[in-house]
Length: 267
Image 1 (tube, rainbow, N blue to C red):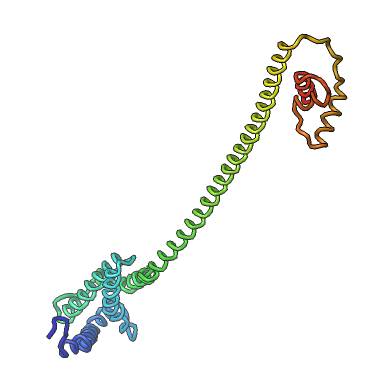
Image 2: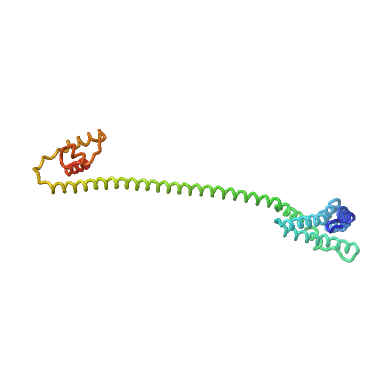
């Protein structure tokens, strides 16, 4: 027989014996608790409610206390204290009632006051246990709170990622514009360097020719408007515009051609 297997007679005791014993114990406590109600001044059918206020209340408080203790639910401490007080009250009621019936004890004002306070105390404690949330309600509330927190965190994370994405995109766009500007400046600098190189080469060549040949009589300068018309015509024809080609077109020296070309560009 495995250790987890329970014999049939043990299962019968748990299934039928426990409820039977509980019912018989409650029935046996009824006369003493009715007698206590009569001693406190209650009469008639109302005295039959005292067993419910004491023994049944003690049983309910004990069950609620055990359930909340196992589930670690709110109110388990007060439920345990109430169950202990209810058990002590039920025990005291039985003992005092039988002592009075057998003549060992007489009633008193304190006894009447204590018994009279039982119903309101029971009502107050039962309402307290009923108002305290159960473990299932607490778990649902915790799950709801976690879901709400997760939703808020998701929204905050999405907004933060969107903001960071926009910042990164703006920085990338600014870097791209800066690179494009640097590239344009580099191209312009290269073009100016080519022009200066051509002018320098032309100037050096013209100086060498002037030194090798005897000085001629100075020629009359070509008007700037004529030079501009010549440059425009060369650009229209698709010819290369340089100091040398402009000099050939105007019929002047290469040095003058470079000088005329520089004058046109500065206009």
